Amino acid sequence: MWKKLFSIWQLPDLRNKILFVLAMLVIFRVAAAIPIPGVDTANLKNFFQDSQLFGLLNIFSGGGLERFSIVAMGVAPYITASIIFQLLVMIVPKLEALQKEGEYGRQKINQYTRYLTVPLSLLQAYGLIALLRQSPKPVFGSLDPFAMALMILTLTAGTVFLMWIGELISEKKVGNGISLLIFAGIIAGLPSALRTFEVLDQSQLFNLAAFFVVGLLTIVLVIIMTEGQRNIPVTYARRVRGMSMGGVDTHLPIRVSQAGVIPIIFAISVILFPPTLAQFFIGAKTQFIADGARAVIAFFNDTTAYGVLYFLLVIAFTYFYTTVIFKPDQISENLQKQGGFIPGIRPGRPTAEFLQHTSHKLIFPAAIFFGGIAVLPLVVQEFTGITSLAVGGTSLLIVVSVAIETFKQIEAQLTARDYEEFL
Image (cartoon, rainbow, N blue to C red; front, top):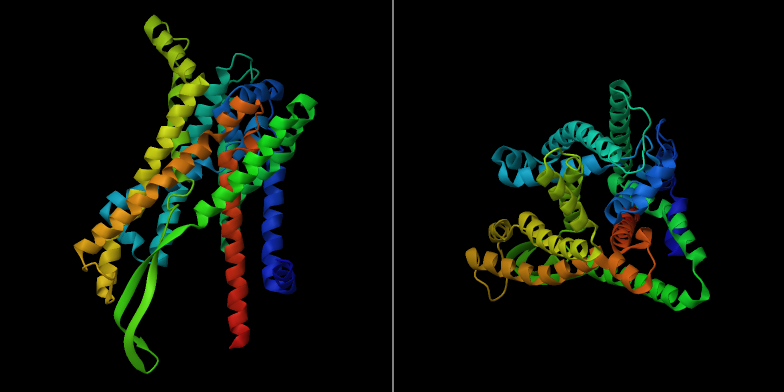
């Protein structure tokens, strides 16, 4: 590890890229500390501490949501827009054809994603302000239409600014920019999260030790699940090798974790919608509407009901998203065109069915794992009494996944330079 770090520092080009990325993350952290005027930060902080779900969203924004900074919404609207277009590519033939046009198609879809981010940011900013105005303790002072419009535009501009920073980071090819911004936000919340352990007395030392053991075990399991894959043997009957032509044995990797953290993000979005919508109907003049809104909010405030629903939604979305992105028919067709086949399986439809069956067997442990990761903070809180979202399962999953991805991209650049020097 130290040898690789020394090699990175010795390469001016790679060193400058990493320093640029660090500088962009510093700018992000500075922006997250600039609050929007006219907000009672004490009441706002209490609001997020009382809500498990909103506390998790605050972690993703690097604490910017809790301070209601100019980047309070983080990159959530951009992620939502990206998810929408990922799904649209699967069902809209024109977008699917555009995606197959290579770099040009990818750039056009990214452009459409950026366009969609702006109206989504405006809607989310308005919804966030409207939700906070329903807080029992006043978060805003006198909020006239002009001040509200200015606040919405400021939040939208903050999201667009982070989207631009994320793309600048991605261009350096030392990690995904949006993922690194989320990573930085979670890491920035660790010091304040660890301060919660200062109030623990000696009688809770066992619970504290169990908490850290669970955290380390979670990191190990995340690495295993992230890196785990099933290698399907593939034989190419005729493949040119140098001046000769012959068969080649290789393998087709199918990852255990194909969906990544997308199912958790989907589940958070779905769980967030009903209580957010119900907040607008608490003060309804029609009694049964107001009672229904209170019942919805009470249901989602129940830790057990919230945990069970969250767990089931993550499992459902893991199956759904993996089915969307994994195309066994296309893989089978490509293998057949290239003269490849799986030993013992006929090309064509039987190969596609075999790949589909193999994928389904891998989805089940991944779905259970991600569901467990999502509700891990609730389980730990139940047994130890310690609440710390910053070191919860979802946060650890994102941090470890982003760290692995970034390290692989840096290692790929080191390998490419080794090949250049060899040639």
